[in-house]
Image (cartoon, rainbow over all chains, first blue to last red; front, side):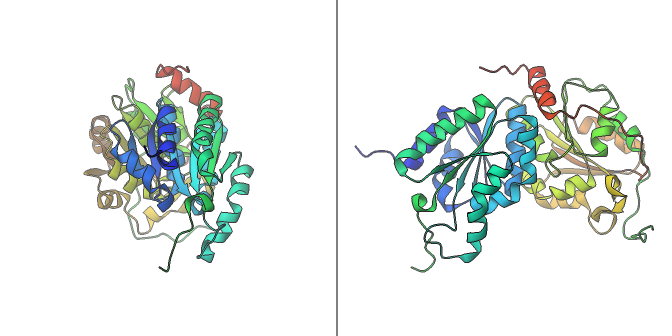
Length: 172
Length: 200
């Protein structure tokens, strides 16, 4: 029998953590999660125009007694900075899964500045940062980060490294 | 020095505190999210409630907090009350909320066409932007603009029964500041307890 992919195991980890609302700005590295969230009758997937909307969405979900996650790419982290004051000030949980660009075999130079700044920006605004480099670690890291976020009321970002998700191919 | 009159769109005439008092008359168990600045004061001055979530920052986030809350509490009504500047900063959320189709969320924008907290500079709604038309173009099926108190009175029920986006044109008068709780952790925990949410 084939082992489930790491992406499928990440989705299972979110389900096990009782995450029921998934906000996202699409990224190819999150395509499986987005599709799985839309297909799951117990989940609500919400497409966003910009990433900071997702921080407010997750805060509202928490106020209403549900757990939410934000899926985004590293370029979107820069859009979130002031809105991160919301979970930090209100001592709310916040969980985001960030696919990294600009760090491993990147073709597009415009991705590099925010990719480089992402872990620092998150840390400076009070978000705990975890980084997954290896497929075998990802699901466990997401499960542990969800526990940290929702049980300890801590903002947590899990960075999925570009090496893990594979560099985007522009010229085939 | 005063800014040149925009002459593009008419100024509102309604008193913001009178408007808020009508919208929240007999609030029952309505869940209310307020955008930072005057909307937070307008709602707070009517009497602090456990079911109010006041923003003192996170500008642009009021509507999306409303959406998260509405999705999490589908049997409850959620009303986000905010100002034109706060709504303009989160204008994309009008598209996200329309696409999410939450039937239990309404938004009321107290629109004085000004950034009142920062020196009353004209905002886009006093220049060229019609937020009701923006919401309609984003896919909101029910939208309204109120310019007199009879229209505000009619909005009161609609905002509690429909997924409605309403603009209420208020005047630019500054009101005495009222300070509702600004400890976000306290307001958050109080709100959740009022909904009967217990940690496990």
